[in-house]
Every structure is written in C-alpha cells, then in structure tokens.
Length: 99
Image (cartoon, rainbow, N blue to C red; front, top):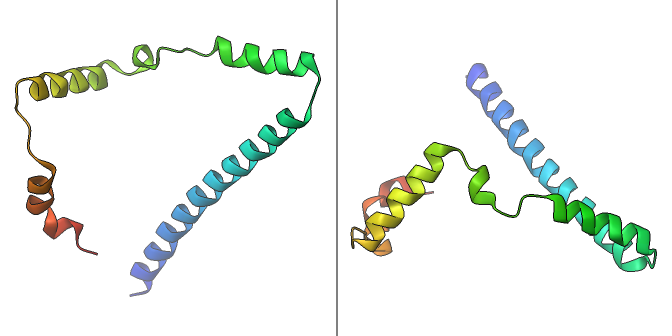
C-alpha cells in the first residue's frame, strides 16, 4: 500500500508542477502585456514586433512528417464521408469516460 501511495504522490507532484508552470507562464504573459500597454518607448515596441515577425508563421511546415501525414489522411477521410458522428463516438467510449 505504501508503494501505491507514493506513486500517487509522485503523479500528483508532476501534475502540480505542470499546473504551476502553466500558471507562471500565464502570469508572465499578463505582466508583459501590462508593461507593453504602459510603455510609449517606440524602440521597445519595435523590438517586440521584430521578435514576432521573425517567428515562423507557417506552423504546418514545422510539424513532423508523421503528424502531417495523419492530418492529411484524416482530412481525406472526412472529405470522403468516412466520419463518425460525435454522439456515436461518445457512446462507444462511454465506459472510459466515466469519472
């Protein structure tokens, strides 16, 4: 029982770390947005614009080949009517979705 409890504590710790990390990112983004809104320094604004403009705008090209193939295959299946309605999927997987 102790081993199982320590596994649960370990998993809880990982989840908590991920949550805190996401919260830290959200807080940092809000702080940066506030500072950007508060500044009238054109140099800072131009630097931020430059950072965003140098980022790749075509995220599709950055995806791994296997992911692109999977998405393309799914789109072709959808175009050919090879789909399953959402309510049917939910019905099929109901046993795994129970809390």
